[in-house]
Image (cartoon, rainbow, N blue to C red; front, side):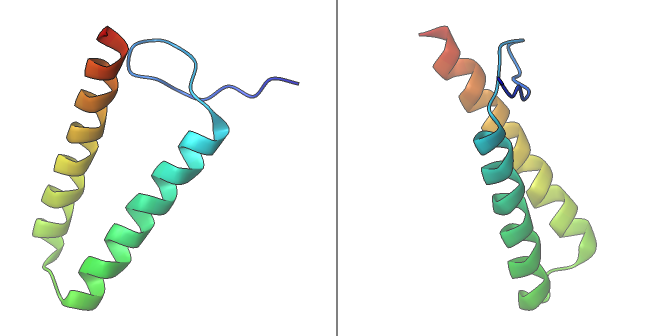
Length: 63
């Protein structure tokens, strides 16, 4: 059975990739909470990390 995830370029992602992404976001969220970062900054930083990961995905698929 082939498991399918999501990709910005419309391709096929992987379950492992989705799990790794969720873990990275969870660790980032926990770390910023422990450090006492404000919720507005937390959302901003998580949004920037997400944008950077999508940009990396698009640029790596282009080559």
